[in-house]
Length: 341
Image (cartoon, rainbow, N blue to C red):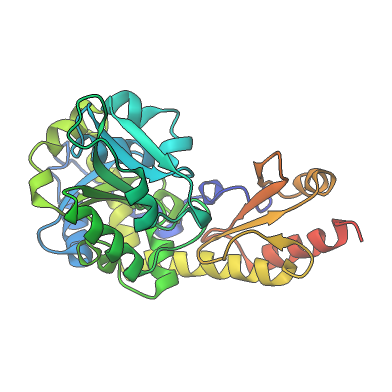
């Protein structure tokens, strides 16, 4: 593929600074399994963002990060509350339920964002051995529908969860886009918002392939080393994963990449919002729109993108650090000239 893609931010390549960091990490010998200086630097940089007490565990991918994180939070007779659109629910081939042995209770909510009212309505049977026991709440920031929880919304949910004795997991595959959208530091989406354990997403924001599990609640850290290893997410040559994190966390590259991706989504929505129905607020780097199947087929011949809901014709357009203004403008023009008048 040589042209621009609006199918996924995973379609964008790695940022040159990330590639340079990986090449630099290739010099000489280094201890394996994370006992190297590059990993120590990555941990230090993440602690600058999320707090000195955070425990950091780099892993290979987002599904691995979610499975590793949730394993430290729930037992097989316990359940995780999540949005019906959550990645752990619809896009991980049942991996969380298989490897946790726990139930996901998915909740239909507008714009992919859980609320206290929706969560409260989903809790029942506590103490009854006939029912799974709610133990955790999983949020996605930014959500799978391109929306963003405000800090107040996060704190309301985490406060409710902790008041119930539950723990809170945050899938941060696109946490950089959320922070950029809100105009806050990464740490504001962690301990400050009441999150107990989270993933820090890097792959979608310019990395080759790395995420990090961040343990913000020390009570959940004890077994994480063993869980990561048993889950096949412990890299032997960890320095190459960690180098990618170092690159993104140096000189705010994570923020520049995410800010640009968000801006390209906003630009696209503004360019076509008068001719297509935009489904959700454009708050990060995703635009959801309604198209007729014939127009979709024509557009996909030149620009890849996903049909999100085949029954309704809803499509998703994703932008990335690599999307240019020219890419957006060319795509927008094609949309406008392709749609029936």
